[in-house]
Image 1: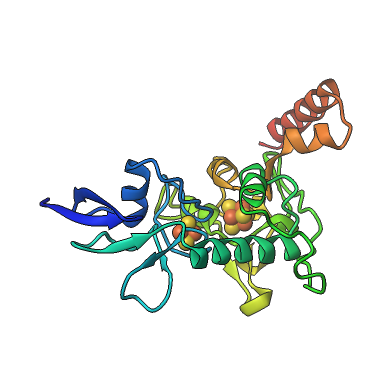
Image 2: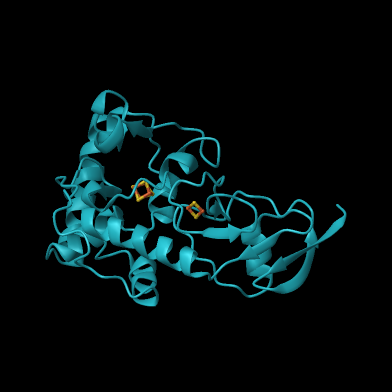
Length: 233
Ligand code: SF4
Ligand code: FES
């Protein structure tokens, strides 16, 4: 792939022509934040936290999907960019439980987020779904980044156990016909848990420890479950 030249924050850089603006930023030590993007999943530009300003383009561009072009003039830290990222974080914080989203908590500090910017925002409330031996789901922490759906599908596992359901504000991650996990095609591979940025998906053992169960009680419970399963096999 031929090399191209473009300008990042006023400095000329070169890169291969198939790179995204996020790739170029990272190659040059520019810490453009990401949330929905993950190295293991296909970029979908859902969260927009990675936006940058490109001269001549009317709106901010999501760096995780926009390809670098010859002679582009890109600003990754302009006032407009910083304000936009800060507002996205403030909107997420006002509607979701981000208390266990460590990376996003750091971003909120970096962008001096006002935690009370949208005091009347309707919060996403959901009971913890505890329906299988491997992980629990707490969708009051889910920011709909889609990473879990992607690794469950073509990006890794091809099991298609979970997907988006509902529309608009009601959109959430769910199973077909709202089935419990053991009644879906889920193979309990744990890849969805591994890519979740907010702990909306959490290993069951961690959840039980946080609920006050001891390691010994969890182990006794798991042994009992395995014995019942073997008896029924
Ligand atoms: S459950 Fe986690 S990985 Fe899945 S969409 Fe929500 S935040 Fe993203
Ligand atoms: S990280 Fe680029 S849009 Fe979410």
